[in-house]
Amino acid sequence: MSAAGTDPHVIAVDVGTSAVRAAAVDTAGRVRAQRRIPRASGVGGDTFDAAALAEDVRAALAGVSGGTAPTALAVAAHIGTVAVDAGLRPVGPGGGWSDTRGVPQLAALGPAAVDRLLRAAGRPSPAGGALAFLLAPGTAELTGVRAVLSPKDFLVARLTGRLTSDTISAAYTLASDVRRRAWNRELLDAAGVDAALLPPQSEPAEVVGALTAEAAAATGLPAGLPVVSGGPDGSVGIGLLLGTAEDVVADVAGTTDVLGRLLPDPGALPDGAVLNPSVLPGRFVAGGATGLTGGAVAHWRTLVGAVDDDRLAAVPPGADGLTVLPGMTGTRFPDWRPDARGAVLGQHPGHGAAHLLRAAQEAAAFTARDALDRLDPTGALPVAFAGGSSRSAHATRLRAEAVGRRLLVSPQPDVTLLGAAALAFLGTGVATDPDTLRARLVGAARTVEPDAARAAAYTRLHARWRALRDAVDAAHAATGPAG
Image 1 (cartoon, rainbow, N blue to C red):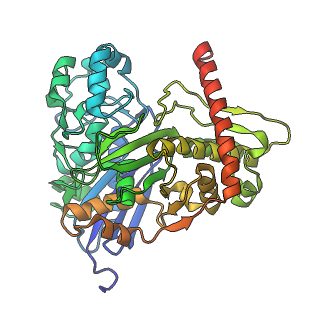
Image 2 (spheres, rainbow, N blue to C red; image 1 turned 180 degrees about the vertical axis):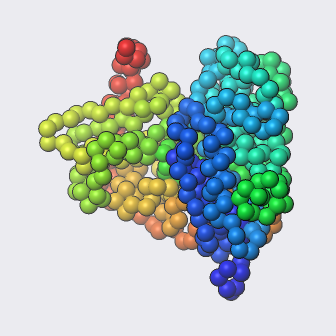
């Protein structure tokens, strides 16, 4: 076994909505250095300051440079849209993961055209993306737009000077034929969109460029460092958790839960699921992001304050009749209700902060359960579980019981960051087997079995929660937004 510090290492970057993290990770799974930079640009789900993001990433990279030269660099980032000029400078604000600009204009293409584009894009609903952005009012008035990129593709372009889009980020534009891993030229022509605004596609683990001298000077990393294409944060984390396994469903629980299952056949897509290219060439993943789950819990924590896990665990299943609906910004997979809104139901004077947070955690788990049941109606497949919630023994136990499945809990919650490292290792040939690499980077999963009685209680509570959610959504749809 090689001594610590002598294994090859890569630089991995994870761009979340609240912070940018960079780390130097070696093939034994050791994190040699890491740096976290809070997002300085007032990030929301709708828009963000792309220029500020580029500076945040450079600051994070500068915090992990130095020492022996890394093998490669890879970035994973939240989905969205950034228009850039010929100098790779942002034109207008970047669109975040919940940006829906242009969706009405997509609908105006007509039902037949929208149906064709959704089938090709592997999407059940037009939830935004680069194609919608290009059709949105005001986009045509933007001057000097050279390309439209995902946030991750924008960062890769700023680091390498090259324009490219990985196949998964391309899928989120609605302009890609995901099964062919190529732009849907016929659709773009019919929509009157210039295909030249969309960059060439690449595989997530493909080396697409090298660090420019200017980026090297700003970060302290060596000029010429290979940069792989990378991918969306949830997809990258799921890729690491799944490896080549088709008998497990992955769940990365963060601001939203992002779930996925490798498909033996891309034609066998569960209802409501998104079809994405896998991080592995030629493979596909069914699943999607749910909408706010952990983000809703975090929102309530900021309002009611911190409550320790022992107090949360003492609250019985069902939170003494308190119910939270977390969909403050609409929901996505599996039911696609963009107009859904959150709610707190059933309050009485005996409820306190612990009840509210417990009910929010249960709501996050019920949301994930809906997605899991769509991906695996048998209920038999275990869940490879990672992300922020997996750090808490209480939250993990609650999740296993509320979804009624065995959890395979990752000992490393930061699978997006490690997934980016895996892409860098695979792209440069330092590693060739995804499953061996997962074992080295993540380690052996911890199994959490649900208690049968509590799982049965949660099955009944889940049905009640769904009925309340549907009633609130119907009432909101009937009355429209207040004001």
